[in-house]
Image 1 (cartoon, rainbow, N blue to C red):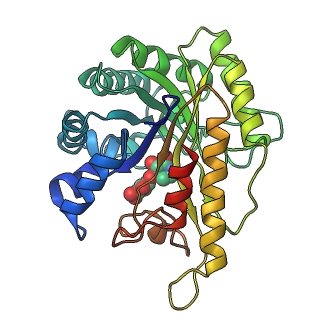
Image 2 (cartoon, rainbow, N blue to C red):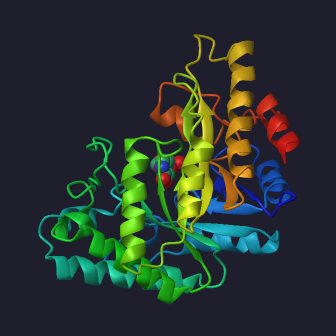
Image 3 (cartoon, rainbow, N blue to C red):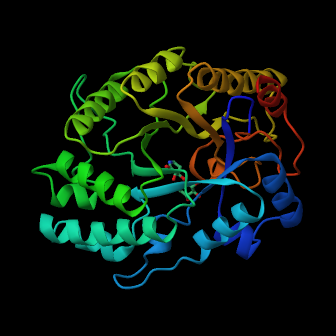
Length: 329
Ligand code: XIL
């Protein structure tokens, strides 16, 4: 925790790192996770495919492991996530297109009440809706993922009405949790965050208990740093919302030896520092979470032709980015 109650968090995959130990140095990993962070986000364990694999089967093992670890180490937990187009179980993706809106709503309501209810009082922030705005937005307009998201697809006649209800169900199940919308490419002021700003105003006008805006902050050195992040956070804060950096990492293309240049290492540290500064500058910014703290466990190399995205190497050597974050707090 930082001087002004900013929680510094990390993602952790409970099933792999707390129960399964499928990567190297599990004990050292857990010690750092417990000692250095005030908040945890289950990286995959609360996603539909993991926690609700069959219509009548919930599997809480990974999520429970994260909660137990957090409890034992006095840490907060960010819940992640209740409505997303990705990492859904086969039974959900197969039902997409066949559900009526009422059927989809019933399935979603049961899921939200069950999962949020199980951890009620123990989760301080929930990423309720994740990546619901399309990348190919029309500037200024809200284009929701009504094709890729099975639930939004079933309720494409009134997707915002469905989103409002998801917030209502979550709020009823855990009135203490702060309820967030969350997305990538959502750091600075751009057409996508304009869409979120319009969506947030609409949800609030509808009386939905939306309480936070999360910028995932998966950055790459291939792109410039968006200096409008603080201004973006401020406009959401002015709506009365909390804001958060929810999944920070800073990846980069690596040479044939798999190593970054000295210049890249320094630039990464600078980008992490500026991300943290944007959060620190806005009093409504409640948490700053890195999406894993070491390169061995980072999702980046599996998805992008890039790497070196986290604040420690696979052997837990602290990078300049780590020192910059610590100095910034
Ligand atoms: C990623 C996880 O880190 C991976 O382990 C998994 O294979 C895919 O999902 N946006 C999100 C996160 O909201 O849930 C994603 O996490 C990264 C992008």
